[in-house]
Amino acid sequence: MQNNTLKIILMIVTFIACALIGYVISPFLFNTSSTIEVNDDFPVGSAVSMGGGGISSDIELGGTRNNNQQVSKPTPEEVVAEAVAVVEAAAEVAAEAAAEVAAEQPAVEVPAPAPTEGMPVITSTVVHERDSRYIKLGLAFTAKATAPEGNTLSYQLFEIGSTEAKYTSANGRFKEVLPVDGGKYLLKVVNQTTGATAEKEVSGFRKIDRYSAAKLQEQLNADTQERLFYFHFDKDKVKFDCEGLEEWELPKTLGAILSGRAAGGWTITVVGTPKYDKYNRITYFKINVTY
Figure 1 (cartoon, rainbow, N blue to C red):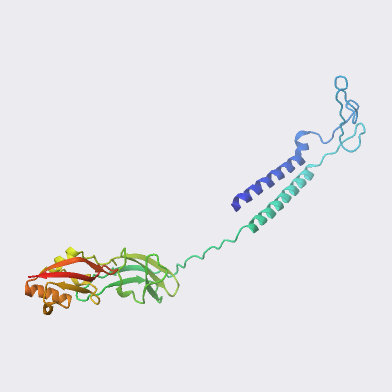
Figure 2 (figure 1 turned 90 degrees about the horizontal axis):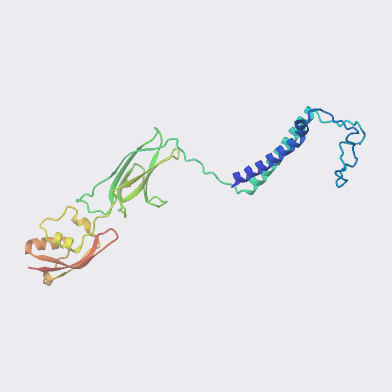
């Protein structure tokens, strides 16, 4: 908007300057001599009759109206000087107009460029597989990056769309990163020495698949469960109800259900739909046992 206004102002000023210059130099363009002679054949100040005197006019050229009067014209040097003065005046008008337009525009802050000196280079990212020996909700993660010798790096993990780091590490090792919808985190490696930051989106932090009632029933009746069977339960909060057994036979733990089925030849039926937490882990289920 500001540029368009300045262009219009400059066009108007240029037009005025050209018009003034043309006015100053026009006598040189349309006359070949430097003087004009006026004689009795065309008397200055006399009335000129046209066809019976219907039209008359007075013509004046220069100061006095004496016959044979010579009217002086400006020299080329004077014309050039006048033209230069007109152009300089037009330039001053344009500068003043531009300053006024600029003063009316709000100041625009230009963000400082991000530092690039000592930019870290992310060389590897590994989301480690769940280990069946350790029933943990989170996943281990390792990141590696390089920077100039003597620079100090820090590693940060952000949930996608978040502006605050959820996990930080000084060496790039994260013991337990919670799974998230979409399974992605944003890794930022910051050079603490220079302030330069490298970023990379990392996948693999997905939630465990949810066991349906049918899938749970299948696993409870199997002789061997899947490797990550226990990861499908909140081991600290899971509860269940059991029907079809005597009070003394009722299992107290998930493991007791499996061992009781193997020893007693039970057939287990899942009743209703299990309940889950936000990580897809089962927090409650109900079964019926028959021999």
